[in-house]
Length: 310
Image: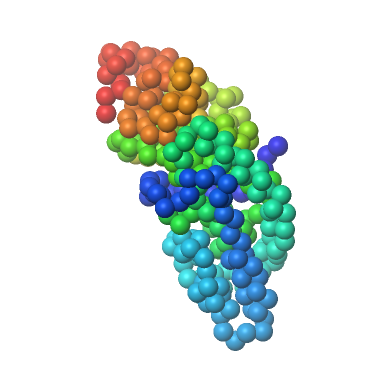
């Protein structure tokens, strides 16, 4: 089933990957679901036609840490939020009661947290904030916690998998030279481990497309993976063909899956996936693109191993 949550602009910006949140609980049963910002939003919303002042000033001032994490580049400020809500008033209304069934999802999320604890005993568990923004982000991971843009939710289908994906970003400490490969491994490995602990996938359409067009996409990726240009692979496309957004998630997943399947100690493999320090060597050890790398290197009259030098 394809979730109805909008995921295409959901995920983390590059600067938000490494948090080192030692202050967060290491107990999966301590998962926090903070919804007071959503409640405060609707209080402000109902005052719009009656108040002479911007009612969202109070929403911002009384906001949780999630509001703080969602302000820069998203909410911006109370005036920006007020302007968008006035223009898109009807678009906000379908999400008004969307969190009514959230308690039914909390148990599922705690199970997912506990499963990660098994696979990765060092895991930390951030709070989850449900806030309202300007329809420009379905959510993110920030130093304050996992933040969900509630106005994007039509229902809670897929919310557990979404939280699982963002949870993995908190655990990641992926280093090495910046390049497309690194960013694809960040996103794809988050998808892989999130699926492992939740049993759910949130990028089914792009994954189906990737599998159907694997040969041509892998050949292209070999040419591009050392580049800093992520267009057509992450967060948007040039419309040069019919590919969906975020194929980088798919190829990062496939590389991670191949690496994981080759390791005898699966728990140790998860630790290594979360702490990749050389993306090119990780790719080599996965073996996923070997056929395509060999073909490319042969055309350049270079050895296979040279390709994996930074």
